[in-house]
Image (cartoon, rainbow, N blue to C red; front, top):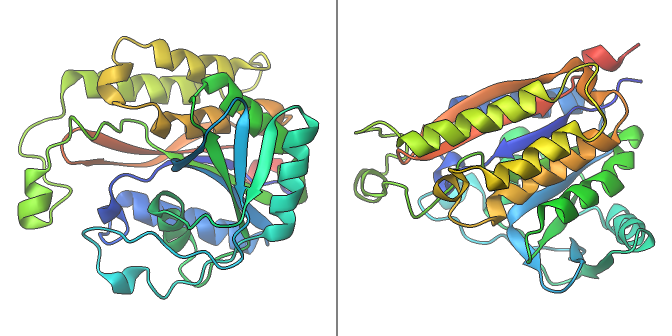
Length: 292
């Protein structure tokens, strides 16, 4: 049975839910492939939910989660979309994390935020598959989040699709908001992106693509992704650490899965928003290459 690829998606601004883009087309393509291969469910780490405490990770266990409202998107795009939390898998993940020494617990009151359900709506417009959301830890330790990924990675062997949704370049302080606020145009580019954003965006692509190929040492992707937080332009590209934790999570998943990186990593789509926000969509592995 072919095993699922692993995705690191940049969800961008809220308007990525309402506007068509190359990223939206790619998300739908990835969702169609997942449904074709009858995935058992989705496991996600986003960028807008973190748990406080040393080694603390929460897992979404609200049986009827509401959706956090989305600005600059018509409610018809998301209000009626039925979320399907996967409570049995959530309970399993809590146990898996605790067995490995983390402090995990189920959160029965958490309502879902657009960083995750934006991706689900775009990937699976016909209906949400059973989904488990895993929180970040509020200390934003990249190695801890990679470890969380390595722990849940074994679910991929059971045909769960694992996704991290954050951002390749995501600094709200450096975005140009006027075109969006005045004209509802999130893709307007009245000037080119700043050099620091272009440089860091290229570094993210280099790390994912060059560390996902046959013959790489185990742990190569985790080492590369976590080192990016020491990149000279990291703080220009990420005003806060939260939107980079999903990349660390995905790196942990990839390095813990035997052979997934051998078939490479592709930059499946990319959109620049608000001048300085780069929404890169990475997929490690593919369904076809793992059929043998």
